[in-house]
Amino acid sequence: MKKLALLILVLLTVWPAYAHRINAFADYSEGKLTVMSYFSDGTPVRNARVTVIDSKGTIVAEGFTDADGIFSIELPPSNYKIVVNESLGHKTETEIVLTPKEKGIPTKKVLQKEQLSGVSQLEERILQKLNQIEKTLNRIRVIEIIGGLGWIVGIFGIIALLKSKS
Amino acid sequence: MHISEGVLPTWLLASGWAVTSLGNYIGLKKLSNENIPASALISSVLFVASLVHIPLGPTSVHLLCNGLAGIILGWGAFPAVFVALLLQALLFQFGGLIVLGVNTFNMAMPAVISYILTKRLVAKGDRRSLLLASIMCSCISVLGAGMLVSAELITTHKAFRAAAYLVIASHMPVAAVEAVITYFCLLFIKKNAPELLGEDL
Image (cartoon, rainbow over all chains, first blue to last red; front, side, top):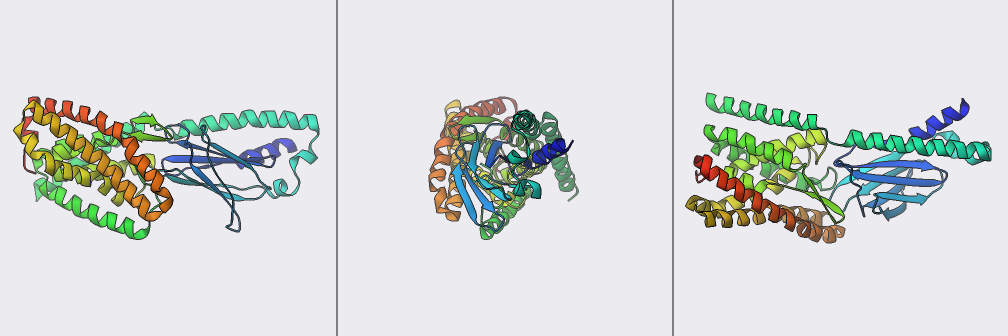
C-alpha cells in the first residue's frame, strides 16, 4: 500500500503544462530529469532550447531537445522550473515539484532490488499511458473546430446587425 | 507563425494592439453589408487554414491564407484575421490574448498591402492577370508576415536571428501552395460571384 502511495506521488510529479501551442511535460525519476515537448497536433518539438531553473532562480542546466522532442539530464533531486523555447517564438513552461520524501531518501535505498525493478517497470508503463493520454487531450478536436466556425458566423451576424441599425 | 505570450516586450505588444485597433476600425468602416457574409467565410477559412500543418524541417508550418483574405476583403482583412485569431487563441491556445494585436497585424497588414498592389490586376479579370495577382499576393502576404514575425523576434533577442531566416525560408513552400489555392479561388469567384472582386473597399 505504501509503495502504491509512493508510486502515485511519483506520478503526480509529472505535471502537465498547458501553455500556448507547444506543450512541455517534465518527469523526474532516479536522478534524471526528462523533458518532453510537443506541438498541439502531437508532433515533437525538435531542437528547442530547454532551460532548467532551480528554486533560487539560477539556471542549472541548458540544452536542446532531440528529434523526438526529448531532453534529459542528470540532476540532484529538487524542485525545478523548466522553460522550453522553440526557435520560432513559441514558448512554454512547466514545473517539477518533488515531495520531501523524494528529496530526502532516494527510493533506491528503501526498496529491495527486485521490488524496484517491478515498480520501475510498472512506472514506465503508466508513464507511457499517461503521456499518450496527455497527447490525445492536447490534440485539437473536431468539435472545437466546428464550434469555432459557429462563433465566426455569430460574430459576423452581430456585426451585420449593428451595421444595419446604424 | 503565432508568437506566444511572454516573448515580446510590452512596447511591441502595446503598439501591436494600437495598430490592429486602427486596422479593425478602418476595416469595419469600409465593410459594406453585402460583404459581411464574405468576411465571415474568409474568417472561417483563416481559422481552419492554420490547423493544416505541413511538417517541414525542425519546425511545423501551416497555411496562412492571408493573401486570399486581402485580395477579396481589402481592409476588411483586419477584422476577419482578428476574429479568426481571437478564436484560435481562446479555443486552441494558439498565440494568446495579449499578443493578439501583434499577431493580427502580422497577418493582416501584408494582406492589405498585397490588396493595394494587386487590385488593378484583379479588376482586369483575365486569366493571366488573375494568375499574376495570385502569385504576387501570396508571396507578399506570406513572406511579408514571415518578415514581420522575424523583425519582431530579432528586436527582442539577438539569438533569434538564425530563427528569423528560418521563418522566411520555411514559408517559401507555403507561399507557393497558397498561390495555387488563391488562383483557383479567384477563378471560381470570377465565374460565380464576380461582384466580390474589383469592388473598391
